[in-house]
Length: 100
Image (cartoon, rainbow, N blue to C red; front, side, top):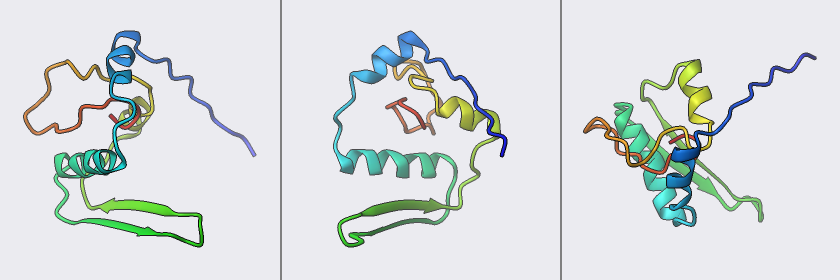
């Protein structure tokens, strides 16, 4: 099996600004993911979770337009987008630590 790895270097300035927000609550993290779904024009957003006998899981599922492979790669970069940068009025996310 051949594995492909992509070396993704963080943007130092964006990473420093993003690290200020580490420690935000689970509720805020879930709300941020739902904000991303809304930004992606999702009409249906489902939050599913289960305790699963001590191995809990949570999924946010939507029908938004998704990301291109390049956008997905960039989203995995720590500090991919400086939270202080101006964004479109529809862009609700601000954390910028992978999946900005």
